[in-house]
Length: 302
Image 1 (cartoon, one colour):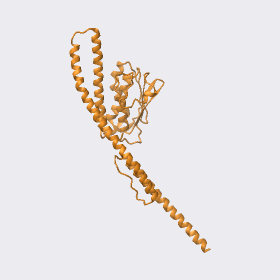
Image 2: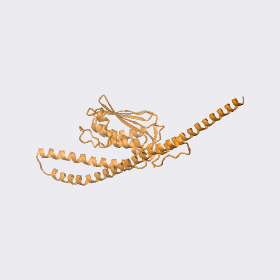
Image 3: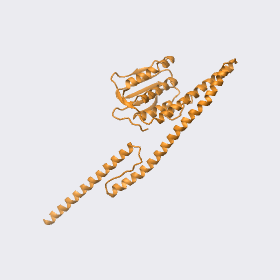
Image 4: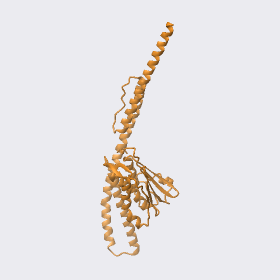
């Protein structure tokens, strides 16, 4: 009987110690999880620290810290690369303007004189190319500005109104190209906390791209869950080229005057706002889908 009581006591002590060990492990794992969440949200080089003295948890923390050191190193390289890219883009934009201004001046002098029809056609081609270069320089500058914006001015805005204003801004351009847009916007306000200027730039770049490089139609649909779908016929595209439309400086070869920056800027600003953007190609049409979920707070990370 005495041995039974002692055995029961030992068994209960083992169970108690195991439960305590499990609770300590759970506490340590929760602590590591919260630390990782905090580090992922912050632009910091901080490593994991755990209060537990358990060897297995300390080993896990050491392994994760080794990974975090590599992550911090890669992030610094990316940040340095983005800074160098921004500076290079800014410098290129400025460097392009000086010779383009001179070329434009000489073109005006040439166009003021009498020329043969063939020469006039050549001068017209040169004038178009110079205008394309001016547009590229301006787009490069806008891209540089978009990269350098440190903090958006977020406020509660209506996606309905912002989309309507952007569409109205392109009314003249659509009418000139014979486009009758198909627009669907709910009567219920779809409110999101976003930067109005950035959202306007996103909409404008997508709409402008559709008008310039589409095949004469355009549709925009806003749903109450904060999803905006733009679509237009684009016979020169295919699924492969569509997958590259958001790449920096990517251009479709059949579109000679595309800068390859408009949709790249739209992607940059959308992700910075905490949203998502994707492009798809189905049945000869380009579909660009924007999502701004209400439950996800906007951030500044890209």
